Amino acid sequence: VHKDQLTAAANDRKSITVFVDLQPKNPYVDLGIMRDVEYIAAGQTKVGTVIYAGTKAHPFNLWIDNARSSEAAKIKTLIERRYSRTGRNYAYVHGKAFTYHKKGIPQIQVDFADQITDTPNKDPLKLHHSGEAYHLAAASVKVKRVAA
Image (cartoon, rainbow, N blue to C red):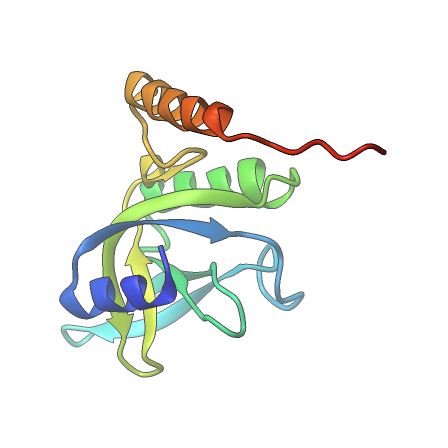
């Protein structure tokens, strides 16, 4: 997904799947990528979690609406154990996109841990067959070998 597609999905509040980079970016926030923030909704103070998943050139965030829920704990643990500290700093995230109105930054709402995956498609049969088509096409391309 390109930045323009993400921005369009956020403006239209559509669901989208995005490849994200979860490398630590800021030494002053949790794991270098997330922090809890207080916000006011319907006259009540709430706590959400922002996860910095973009770059300085193309800012983009993931958003957990209730930072203190059991599902938020699962999401944060998944990010910490699978994506942030282990060296596998990338993931696919699927969810409803929206724009953070104060800064105009596109975000994806993350409500469940299964929205974050290693592959863009959770169906292994479909993923296998799409990979097969890719490999057949790649194998049909003539490659000129260069002597070392």
